[in-house]
View (tube, rainbow, N blue to C red):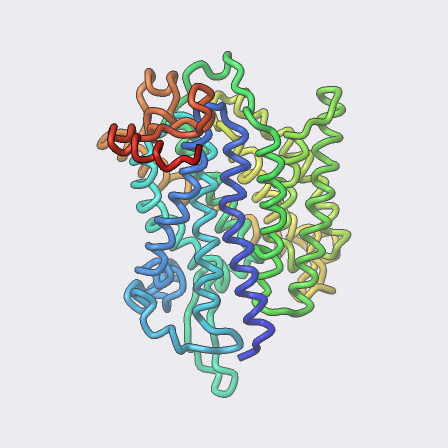
Length: 442
């Protein structure tokens, strides 16, 4: 066991875990005052539910030995993480288990931004269980589970997923499994639940831009673990991914702000924060296969593309509340396809893209992997969402939505000026109130 690699992977896992609360702030600031708690609770519930599923069977679905065609890991192989406590290679297997768990968590949480303000919280929790099981865990197997061959004998000791091995598409840290997957799912759910009351005629501005910028900062900070941690070691690959993550994100902010300036006459804080996420999304699949100059190209184009793509919802009439489609689906597609264009054999990936003399071989592989995940996620999510809507009901009723989802679903308010507090508290008994009053110093 390499203690340095182990320390880096566990630190990276903690950084990625921080991204989900960061996402809660990012999304929470973007919604209206009456929806902020519900928006943040959707992220925190994902953290709780997906973790439990991952320990019970999710890791086995994703990283168990393939049971046919590269589509699914053996669900019983690591049930309850059995047999993994003392399993140690370069890093302990449980360190890898924890690292991959936080990827699963944030992928589900990302979807929630597409249906802000209008989804029942209980239905969302049910959706989390079903979607993680049917969509995320299998896709993680496709993309992240690599076949292992014994170096001495040449015998295959573990068989992984079809995108990573049969197709040989590159996805360093989750452009397909995380961002295209979540973006396609967000689009499907937005179509199932329909438009918010008053959209698009009624202005639905972010209620707290400092929250948005704080969330973007936390996401960027955590993303160094997301990308550089995917090297699974403290090595030159991690260093390349770290620098590429910094460079692409900075370039994306510039691209987004220039687009805003030309289109609207001014650059905004919301645009800068959104540019952060666009750059992070786009460099995620390519962080280990492009040079720093390539990362700047990917980032600046991502900033421009995503800034333009967020307007697609008005043209096509779907209410993607917080632009999950415009940022994560479009950004994820661009970053994944960009590998086939600007990948360089000077990187540890050892592959040249089209613009570096590599032809279209890698480009078509990237395209097949990206659109396969998009189609799978969209179709299954639409079916899951429709079944939940037709059975227990997914969409909040109109009256509760107008009055405020926080009060209806959680009996709380983020900002309660009448009491000076932030939540609805139960009324204490008269005896308890008198006791409390007697304990206050004169």
